[in-house]
Amino acid sequence: MPIKLDEALGAEFGAVEFSWTATNVQLYNLALGAGSDPMDPRELSYVVDGTPQVLPTFGCVAASFNDVNPPKVSWPGIEIDLAKILHASEKVIVPAPLPASGSARAISRIVDVWDKGKAAVVVLETNVTSTDGTPLWTQQRSIFARGEGGFGGERGPSSSSELPDRAPDFEIDMPVSPQQALLYRLCGDRNPLHSDPGFAAAAGFDRPILHGLCTYGMTCKAVVDSALDGDAGAVRSFGARFAGVVFPGETLRARLWNDGARVVGTVVAPGRDDAAVLGDVELVRA
Image 1 (cartoon, rainbow, N blue to C red):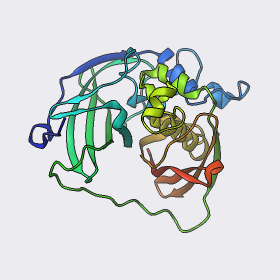
Image 2: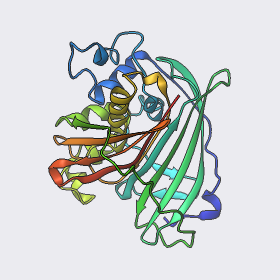
Image 3: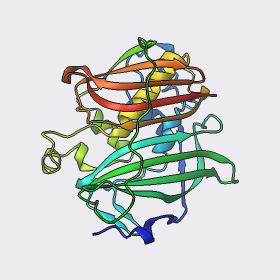
């Protein structure tokens, strides 16, 4: 279905109310690989009962835990086949540490729609508040839709940020377990691209791929553990651009630089000649 730019741009979605529990946070953290060393107090802080550490990236999935069906890309002026969709970028901004449980209200809107010729990029923003109206987090994301370009819109930005011209301050290997995508999908993303070999083949992949948001969350945890002494509450924003696919069972490598109030970096797959996985990684400290 062709994108209807006038209808889509600026469109606001209906409010969604949702709640989450400490168990949801624990499951999310486990799906990122937390607890890999069950004798490490830092790892246990992510899975302790009642008060697990909450990474800001949890905000990107907090409303999704009750979703048991594949997501649909059906917004005002936009209707896209799920097999054509790839996550392009994600950012979450938190004015204060997120609570381990709570209730909230989210309102989303379409901020931009870019015409890349053979593809379209849809940029969305979601503002989340507590039930009393206190701001909790803002989620900014974009999706890349193959074959949906050519609708006459502007091409949009295409630049990426530069990294410091020196050796990384941290290099962290992040193993991806063979079943990690199957575990992460329990956080609410049931897209069969991550679990069904036949669906993945139809989308052009030889096997199911890991959720981009799982790689994103794993990287945020790696930055928190290495550069923030394991303090998830010391983050005010975390963003990244999705640069390539990840396959369950491989090991990723995050290369990170301290840059003032920020930590910036990139993530590659060493087993595939350092194929880019995440670019423009940026964590802003509180």
